[in-house]
Length: 126
Image 1 (spheres, helix red, strand yellow):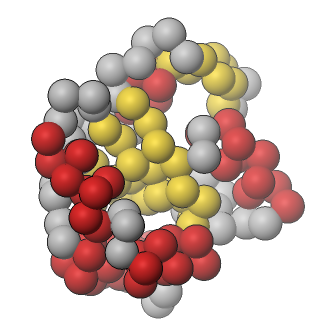
Image 2 (image 1 turned 180 degrees about the vertical axis):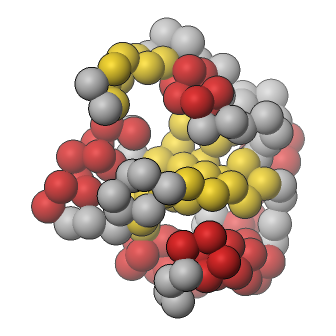
């Protein structure tokens, strides 16, 4: 989803967001797309628990409104303090608290890291 589509979906179906922050030149981002995000367990888990967003950290052309302000995808990535790629930003449904899970991970590592992050950052057992 695009960020603004996830925000709209969250109004009728509150879930955490998982924002896949990537760049076009990032080889590890492409590896995540090809190997981790095609895994059926990962797909099912993300679809059940999150609004999934892809955000290009270097796209300063496409803009959207969030919280009464206009952001480009690059500005939103900077606002979320993303400095490495791939990086997965988890945002709670109220959109007030965020946490990051940086770096490439295999499907099992990704799900394990995501569960651990959510439990520690938000005190939620997925």
